[in-house]
Length: 310
Image (cartoon, one colour):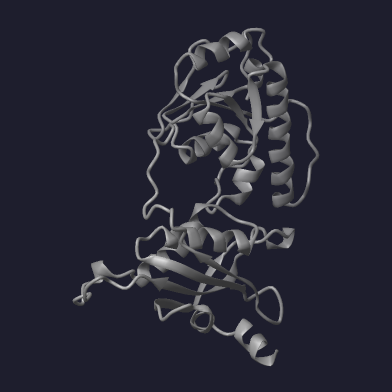
């Protein structure tokens, strides 16, 4: 038992050596410390903490001598790059999720056979809190995942005047016939919202208010489905479904969140359009923001009679 406990807390390199069926070539990254925002608890939001990464990758030996050629081996940079890319992709709640994504990214490299990933939080208590996973390359796995065409949606911001318009269905018909995937965004509802002294608390309240308005829109047209994750958005775009964006999760989980507050919902929609690599942002019932990427324009019909409201 003592030897097993020692092995459990040993560096992943020792674990790899102890559990390998045969001698294997390995590359390792030890005690690589990065600051990031991560965690499922509320007190972990809005603050960065130190993460310590220790990673060992078992690699397929080259069929012939490497001849001191960096292009013929799995570079350490691929490991540190996997960490950086996954941390930048989106904010995650669980170390387990981050470890899985890093492992999958490294195992996509042709030389990688098996990976040991240990991630520890250094600032959550007197000791290090962490997870460790071991993943092997599946025999059927592709060395490099085949790329798929990235859908470029049209993001449409609907002011309250458009949401309440009797012509809403015809307006959605018009955008749907354009052929591009369609994602709808809303502004804040007209009803008063609770007020909080703390800015971050008010931000959460306002994001939830945006989501309430998204449900109001979805209730007015059965084609519209409220969606709050990138996975659901991607699925809907690939299957020709109309999504109404519920912003809380994507905004709060973003590695680099929007500078715009929910009260400036048009700018928030513009940030979202850039995140989704939209072909354009169209506003209905309110002027379009100035933007070159993606291009933004106001719908000429305005979507409803009367004075437009955000």
